[in-house]
Length: 72
Figure 1 (cartoon, helix red, strand yellow):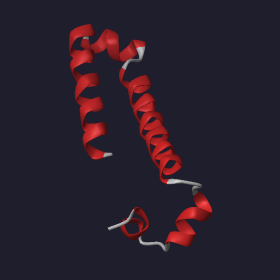
Figure 2 (tube, rainbow, N blue to C red):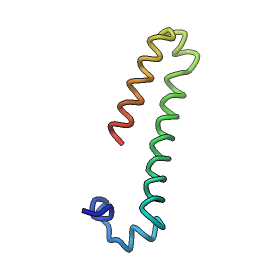
Figure 3 (spheres, one colour):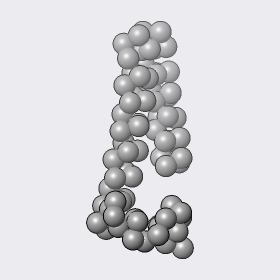
Figure 4 (cartoon, rainbow, N blue to C red):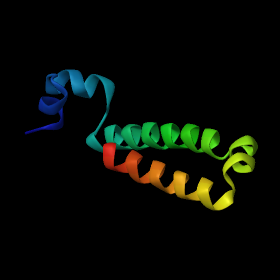
């Protein structure tokens, strides 16, 4: 099954948006990292660190990163 098939579009439509599979992969990776960065900004706020402590905040952060990579 091709990437276009999995996305439910024709290969022509896929290549309208992306010049190559590598470009599509880079875009997906960028979106994943952006989402993780947003989550980490929220999880590592000074308020969260003061409320939970550093060790708990780090545990929460690691779980969030693992879930993000497992999902995406």
